[in-house]
Image 1 (cartoon, rainbow, N blue to C red):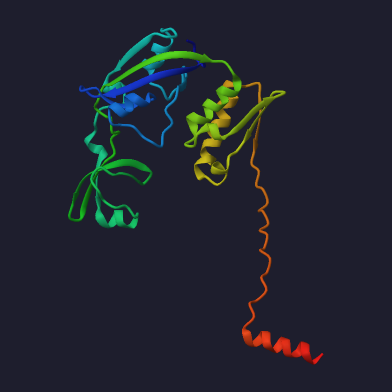
Image 2: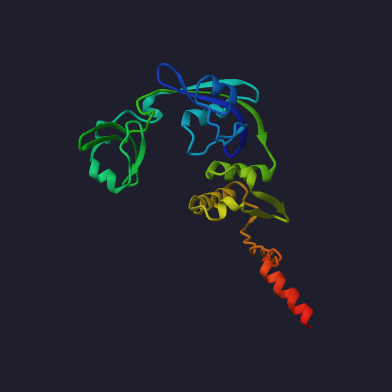
Length: 252
């Protein structure tokens, strides 16, 4: 494999000396290890060889393997998520968390002052938050099999969206015609604040990996449908009203 190749893989990632499974694209394996997430779609994972968001050891491994071969890479703790740093454990007051509308519960993940951490202790008036990465201090074991190389530009573009945005890329209508790449947004993305940041990254990566394409992002806001008013029903007449009408008719 070479830098910039889009590859489809099956993978499993384990951490610690006990090799606990923490991530996989294989549904059955996730269920067997009690990490199945029903909100997640389990399918072939697509990665780009040589990107900075992959560990150096994994990137090097990709370049020296072949399609269909199962490969395992071990990454030392200091080269993975780093060693644990006691200075990354901070004390916060309960009042401080209350102002941020955070319920102090042990194990809860929180974001305070733009830093993500996990509550590890709650005592009267004090909350201890660990800002170390949850896998800090643990070696990583990454096993994978390359299934194929992605060549279709539309599929590459869809993969870029999948890597950068929380919503499923299958909801986007994508097409390429005459060197114009058109992205039609689904309803879920139009008012999603996460889309704003994701859009910048997606455009940057499409320009990088599909440089011959112009990019057109389409957001269509249809006019609201007019609601048809139900036909008005004639008021039900009382017996007295009916008799009065009969009298009037007789007098004519």
